[in-house]
Length: 255
Image (cartoon, rainbow, N blue to C red; front, side, top):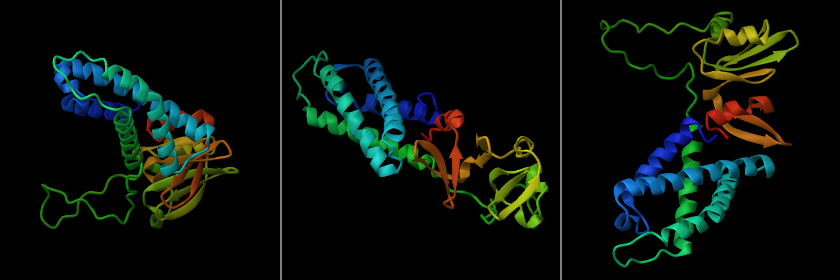
């Protein structure tokens, strides 16, 4: 999604970097303010095109793996973005002669920049899943030899056996029950999905389907099969995503 936090951060960082570097003669031909306007606008246009091509590749072409989808998105963005970039760069006002960049140089610049953004997005959504067995974070300021206080469990976990007290992974509806899965195992509870979700306080997750809730830090990749989106979790499980909930994935920069 164009206004997602990841997208805005990428736009800001790339715009600042390119404005300071001033490639293709813009450093000599424009002052810093005009370079920021010039490159900031072009990078924003490139991101809008990238979002459009990402939807085209994932939804229209059905490419879901990182390498094929990122390569195709970068190639399409390069073909669409390089001509206007070439037109603008070669018509900048210059106070002295300069070497004019070739179309191939500009295309390589656009391709590598687009692919770099794809790598950043992919890396951010592959944050490691932290389970109950993770090493504890050292605490400061307490008395020597005293154990650090444990955070309160979500109410949903308190309904489970103590052996299942670990990070929540998914909640799924099955008849009149919900199957609650944690890093330590799973159990069934006689309750509605809406009530179970209400008891996940403190856990960063969302309902992505009428019958499924998922913790975001358990998501590894987004896949598409037969026109439908699904979340591939860290352990290989697939969680379906309904069309009405795809905006939640867009907001997190997952698609």
